[in-house]
Image 1 (cartoon, helix red, strand yellow):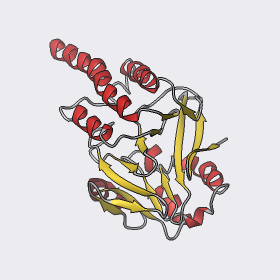
Image 2 (cartoon, helix red, strand yellow):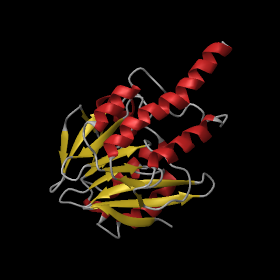
Image 3 (cartoon, rainbow, N blue to C red):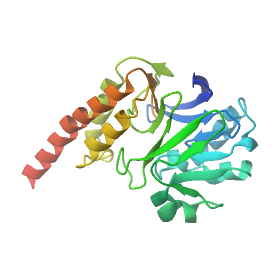
Image 4 (tube, helix red, strand yellow):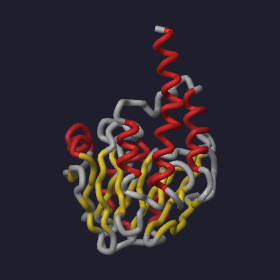
Length: 250
């Protein structure tokens, strides 16, 4: 069953743990004048997520639906949400709109550029493009400027059925997930290391986030900027070594 927790003012985390993956799938609802849902969830999760959202707002009242990048857990149930919420509009990167959503969605999306904002009423979410971080040409995140909430998608991915909010070592948990996935025959390259990785993480750190709302695992409350800057070192250590090994093997 979905678990619902208010993890920041007007921000609800709807979490479903799937033991077959040993992973939480988190969906974030902003309760406001123009409600926003970040992550639609998979199509097969839709009834459970919809029923959980209905405990906070009428799902038909959703105004905005957003996500980071085109992937089934990020936006697989988009059309189901657009059907139950007739006023809702999908929001994604301009790349995502052009290469995926204009064809995939039953209604036209709004492709947004770097720095554009979504006003939900009491909250303002600014769009920050993050191509190939954590993955996807179309990737991006939303930052709430008043509360310091960063809706950060797969960044700080954690394995297991963990607590809704933590101030513990969330970077260590992400490091453990990256290390585990690097040993997986299929998932080994789920986070690419590119020349822009550190720069993009530093750009997010410059926002001085105080809440890192991760799609998989606990939401982190604390020094988000420090965690993001340290993440660049972690990824360089984990993935840089893999790249060197692969180069030598070639």
